[in-house]
Amino acid sequence: MYTPSAFRQNDLATLHREIQACRLATLISHGENGLQASHLPLLLRPEEGEYGTLYGHLARANPHARLLAEGGEALVVFSSADAYVSPSWYPAKAEHGKVVPTWNYIAVHAYGRAEVFDDAERLRNLLGELTDRHESLRPQPWAIDDAPRDYIDGMLRAIVGFALPIERLEGKWKLGQNRSEADQHGVHDGLAASLDSRDRALAQRMAD
Image 1 (cartoon, one colour):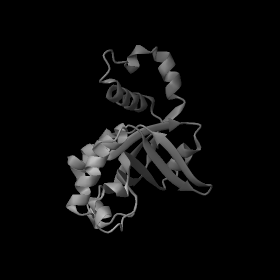
Image 2 (cartoon, rainbow, N blue to C red; image 1 turned 90 degrees about the horizontal axis):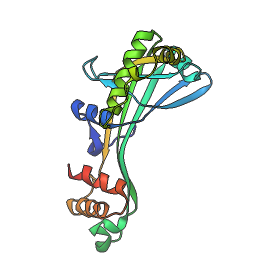
Image 3 (cartoon, one colour; image 1 turned 135 degrees about the vertical axis):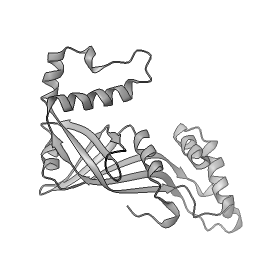
């Protein structure tokens, strides 16, 4: 990922928070038949390894599962808030007009080689953790034990899990840090006044 120094984020705790806040990641691998990409909810265990370890699962029938098992390097992309930036928000537009549109965003890239597993108990524990994470805010959370045991056992046979120790971690916070303070304030105010909640979300991140 091209990351000029003004946009580079190296703080591990900050990167981990961004990973954990992302609900759906993109897993990308390359094999003899080209690129494979899968969109997955993932679990981060930050205490495992130098940069943490990612856990997830794929359908056993998914060719990506076989590709992961070959042990090649994989890339996981975590995308966060993003928004179009209008040149009209820059005070510099009124001064000299030498401004163009851009896009502001936050992204984290994690690289590593996966270990694929199909042990039923290990898979069940992983699915239980993922389910608990995404059900926790519901008034009546669903739990994996709510379903019949034989039904879940059959579902487990249809998937494979993977652990991906992160070997390299990159963060890019492209929030206009290369612009003047006045231009940054102009962008923040423009986004904050938008009718689009995604724009307002990025404005909040700029203010954090």
